[in-house]
Length: 263
Image 1 (cartoon, rainbow, N blue to C red):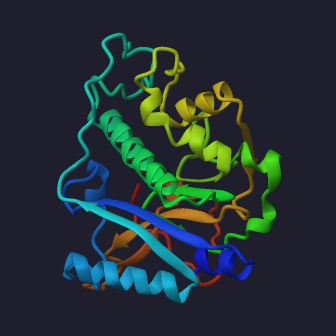
Image 2 (cartoon, helix red, strand yellow; image 1 turned 135 degrees about the vertical axis):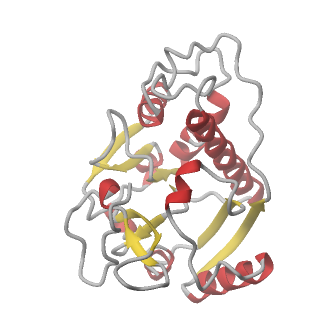
Image 3 (cartoon, one colour; image 1 turned 180 degrees about the horizontal axis):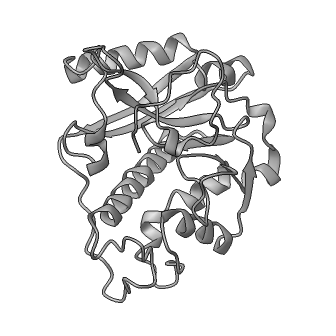
């Protein structure tokens, strides 16, 4: 409703590409949240039909949907990859968290390849994590078009951890091709910029590849991390926003509440 419908209203054709890992086999921190009680028991095919219908009702198309039973397999790490130089806060050679970053980048690059196989040249690609909740509409007229827009990376101007906030990135056409190949860049001899974390890595990669990183207010990219949690005396979990990862301490009227002590 907050992403597909606004873009469709402006005349864009909106296509959705989604890749998921089955419950219980994703990154460790997902165990801190609970499942949507209305969806957790639904078979995979039924969930896909519901999603496809919701996207269509908003004016878009679900073009690609993949749900893995197991985590993505990461290629053998480069032998010359120093754990103290690349994402040294959680180096993939030593850290499960760092390895999961590469898994996400791999699935994202596969989605990028799917867009190429579709034969469509999109003006924008929204690269976001599956836990993003949009508290207000995403209006594409806030972003540059044409040649300048094609090389632009739009990120929220908060929670960048020394780089760019990678929870939801709006990318121009050329920027998507150069940044969503972060996984492949990790194996390139000259493609691994010195970095503390994934945010710094992507920021440095954008610079190396001649992209313009444009940091915008939360109101322009109004998404936040969300999950389901039990609140108060309720026996069923309900949707809430993770305040620790929210760029604003005050969310718009009608937004879910902040989660009870959750990071």
